[in-house]
Image (cartoon, rainbow, N blue to C red):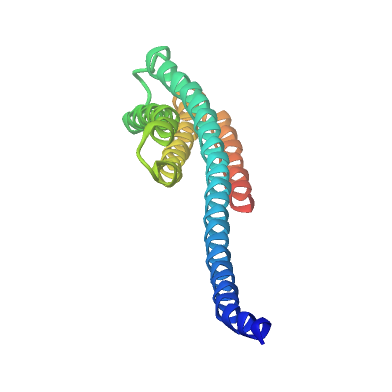
Length: 198
């Protein structure tokens, strides 16, 4: 009889103990799920930053390449302005067009040099030393400005070809100048097809 009373008196305590253990398990499971969620978000952010870093390096290298070629063409155009003696007996329109195209080529290429140099210097600096989210801002800004710099480079390249065309009519006989004109126009056509295809 005493054994039964002791058993019945311990039964509520055992039930409370089981309830307490059962209540701790959901709390632990919720905490583990939250920790897993935070770890997944952190890994996702790290992976995204790694991808954006590759994009940043890609645009930086492209800016350096375009800047180098632009500086080369700007030097050629400057030499065309300072080292070429324009014949005074040449037609006025030909002399004017030659000087205009040469000056435009040099100006466009120098703008491209300045733009790409600033991009390759300031873009990675913003990504490294800027506030939170600067990596995305730097990559998006470099993407937009690189397109403008490349467009300026292409305009300078076109003006450089037209300057060479006018140089032919300025310095040589009409037969030679006509041959040069055909070659330059064919080269421009091939360049345009290549740009469109790529």
